[in-house]
Image (cartoon, rainbow, N blue to C red; front, side, top):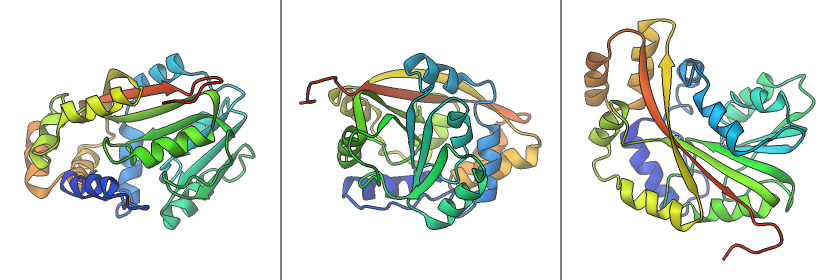
Amino acid sequence: MVTRALARVVGEVRRGHDTVPSPNIWHWPEVYEVENRAQDVEGDIWRVLAELVDWTGRDVADVGCGDGFHLPRFAETARRVVGIEPHLPLVRRARDRVAGQPVVEVLAGSAQRLPLPDASVDLVHARTAYFFGPGCEPGLAEADRVLRPGGSLVIVDLDVRHRPYGDWMHSDLPGYDTVEVDEFFARNGFTSRQVETLWRFDTRADLDAVLRIEFSARVAARAVAEVVGQSLPVGYRVMHRHKPTGLLRP
């Protein structure tokens, strides 16, 4: 997301605001669709997700699902998939995307107030949405509430250590404390895996447009100048924890 706006998003999460605007997809959903299609073209994140948890025949909640880009992938094997998104225009876009898929529904709601019953899903998935570190405790508690014993919470986020994308993020977010974020998730019972992915675009114009919605004008200009061709490597962290079976998490 536009990283100076991301600083505001992180701040609002830490202050406990219930709905935190996304500074990219809320304003440029068509460009973000291009970005989604270009991300992880070799399927490395999906490979790691499948190694961590099997959602075949199980119930999945995708928190902060945006316009539903990942819902059909989960629906290929899941019993039921629920997308949850606070921004009503994106809720409508997501519902249009999955129309005709009976195992998928899209609900309006936030990470802090999931519109789901207790112990109703086996996997809670969130990708570059809300769970950015300290301040997201209400969302972690909600995920535990809706997960069945033995279920999994998986958070996919950008790896600010990975170059060159992480360097551009640091330029816009000089106060981002990677160690603090890592320690927060470790304290909350998560394991973390670093994943390098490839973003590949159909045209150079598409790549440039995506960089311009992800960064400030100054940093986007630098990123556009530094990228050669129509692809770039981007690093992620995939963070995962199980809900204990028969035990309460301390």
